Length: 319
View 1 (cartoon, rainbow, N blue to C red):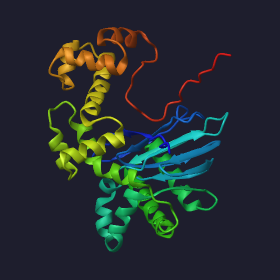
View 2: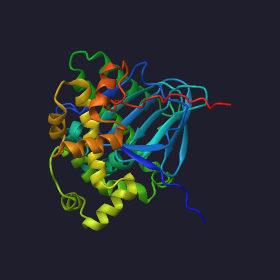
View 3: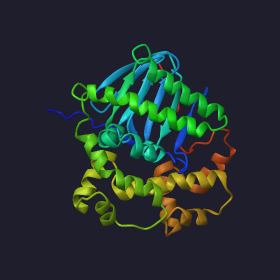
């Protein structure tokens, strides 16, 4: 019996301010393509989405769920998923990325002491699509958060904290009701959670030297088990993934600065220019010098820091 192809999983890290760990992505550029990407992704924080037009499908590791205009999506960190619109449409979205624990920690201690463990479990495990007509209070709270983050009126950060606390309280009974009905992510989700500390560390310390043993220890695994599990989930070994992140960071510096290529290679963690050139060519198909010339000249750079879903170009097959 042939094995089904394993889904590729991408990690997306959002750098949220410590004092107010909330990020809003909204506007006309946030349209979702109708072309499935073929790649699942997960985040380092809670994603709250609101579909503003059209419809489509949200795909998780082991299930698909339809969405429509007015729906609110709640996706916990480390839940693998992807989104695509119905054929011939490009659904418009607003997204809120938030580190709920850091944002609301004082409120949890004061207001949710009795249920704090269960609320924390919800924040790390809950994913759902909520329809506006069935959940008008949740729709109101999410649209209010978006509005406050857009307008940034006086004391908006305090108002947003209050709205997000209210949202968590509204979601909590829904989460409890759905626990026994909602399909759980397969072992792949559990495995993502296990290696998440290593992925976070790589993204934060990519310019430094560290060992596979150190990453394995962060995850509470033996080096052999860690290497095998990491490769199974990310479809790259830890070292190859680290070098891929370094090349991504280098490409940004090549495009946005005039730093010498040698300095850039050292800045992102390579100890020799030849090694940097080799990994750069493997990832991006040409030497850093040639890539820089094209990237600087191009109106739309070939590589940029991820800032949300991008609409892939349509490829018309030749007949």
